Length: 134
Image 1: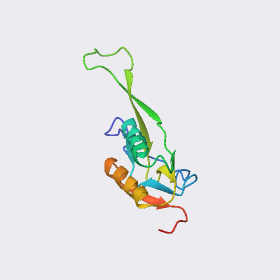
Image 2 (image 1 turned 90 degrees about the vertical axis):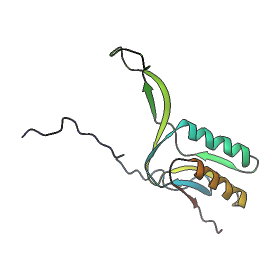
Image 3 (image 1 turned 90 degrees about the horizontal axis):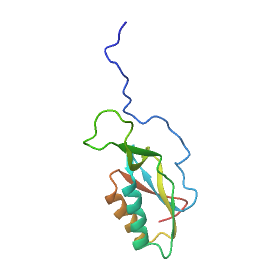
């Protein structure tokens, strides 16, 4: 029987690795609550905010890296002539992944840092702790 569709379009991120779900380096971290794609802008934003507020008394460990490079052709180019130039680095993140970890004492300044970062990111996040009483 001939199918009605020519191609199968997969619109869901598949796979469920348990490698990036627990804290290893720090005692608190930011966990992602939805599947999404983060561009390099947001990773730089986290680094700048960390330097601005917490650099003197804590250490930051990133648990994600860019794993895909997107390409784009110029708008006035003709058809053909290969693939376009690199224009953006992105990271595909999944539900439950840890974005980054902090090795520091839990203070109101640290909680404010997490709150500011979660407002600036385009995805839902939550703060997780490792054997710490608040």
